[in-house]
Image (cartoon, rainbow over all chains, first blue to last red; front, side, top):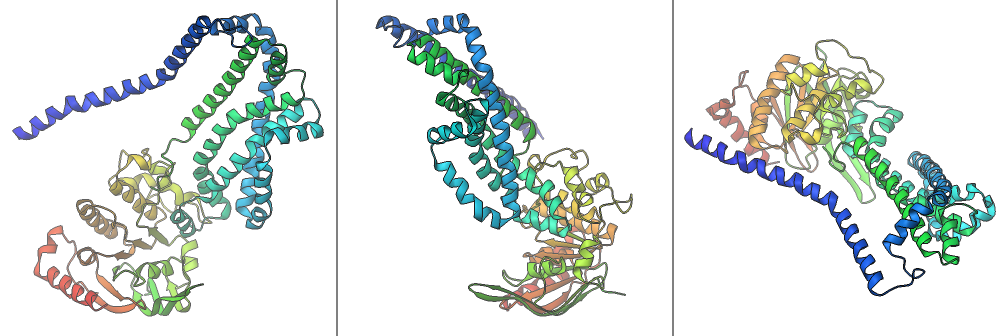
Amino acid sequence: MATVSRVASSTEPSGGAPGASVSSRAGRHTLLPFGTAAALLVAWQVLAWAFALPIYIAPTPAQIARTLVTELPTLLRNFVPTAAESFVGFLLGNTVAILVAVLFVHSKRLEAALYPIAVFINTIPILAKAPILVLIFGLGMTSKVVIAAFICFFPTLANMVRGLTSVNPQSLELMRVLSASRAEVFWKLRVPSSLPFLFSALKIASTTSVLGAIVGEWIGADLGLGALIIEATHNFRSPLLYATVFVASGWAVLFFAVVSFAERRIVTWKPGESA
Amino acid sequence: MTPAVKLEAASVRFTSERGSVTALENVGIEIPPGGFWSLLGPSGCGKSTLLRLVADLVAPTHGTVAVLGGPPATARVNRELGFVFQDPTLLPWRSALENVRLPLEVGPQKRERSAQWTPEGLLRLVGLAGREDALPHELSGGMRQRVAIARALVSEPRILLMDEPFGALDEITRDTLNEELLRIWKQTGTTILFVTHSIPEAVFLSERVLVLATNPGRVREVVDCGLPYPRPLSVRETPEFIQIAAHLRALLQTC
């Protein structure tokens, strides 16, 4: 009895300590990237001063920050179309990809007929696809939405097909013993199993859709962060160029964070575990 | 009385590009309702195939299979069959209670048959009261298998098919679940077909042990255990138990 209580009392404090250190380590990890970014900005500022770099080659972080404030109206005016194009493109591309994946899972013949073509289209670089799509859909926002949708489409299609088909075979046997219909197997088994795969794809799509919209704007647009990047570059307005890049990246990171948050709320189980 | 399961000259042959394998040949058995039978035999003797034959997961190549006097498919659709796999096969996104409810949500016979075995009551029966909301990854292996047993019982099947359900568990958990299974069997009056690799498990649980031989899978002998119920775990140290186990061991060596 004495041994038991001694063992119990000796494990308790040591059992608590690792837990506490794990959580504080996790806290340090979330702060770590911010610390690194701050250090890099400081180093950049110091180096730009030290080498007296001209502003059009490499503006200092301070100059960029000033531009972010003074050019805020311009940046916002150009941000709105890019944000809208990438968001609508994200919705469109992923929706179509999910629907096509569902079709593929239900018809092997359709998959055999169309999957190779989807792969082929995916191999065309976005820089080659973009002008073609601008020619077809014009210089307005539609072509950018379509380009953003295209860039989201393939990763989601590939992941979703895998997700819907990677169902534990024993779970399928279970559903058969339960005399479940095809629709029940789809909604109660295939769809939930596919969610972890879908979210991996959506996280990729959240950042690439912004890339797609910007590339589309390069080809031809009056307004948008892509158009602003081209304009700032041609006019040697480097602080504005950098500021635009920060806004574009900030939007992509925010988009990614929202999708990651949704993933954490929805996928509460441990994927890949065939419990 | 109609037998719960009746096989007459049943054979199963699997044909693939590499040739055909006879999993079961000329099997004839008759299991009375409420019986507890174990299927014992070396790997590849067709134990699982026999279970799948009854569950309508495999069709016989020759012969007939009758479940409760009708075709296995009818029994399956009418929810007379419960199946417990070696893996718990729980849906990882569903809580323990939602997993037990699954059979009530799918298939043509969705409604609950009586208030006697509610999902909540079944979780209590398998000793998981208070863990209703736990997700499968939050439960131990033994607890997951208990959830799977509760799920198999929720539609009040008249036949429970168990394919090495405790094979992946440690011995202590296995002993506990063996005792609980006998208690559940007595309480529900279900016919149980239990596939196992373990001689002591087969002798401890069953009224009869069906010994299968391999290549091709066929019935070697039906051994009557004859030990009175209820059986405490200590029954395994009695001379009768040891004698039956020794007989089975000798039989298996010739399979």
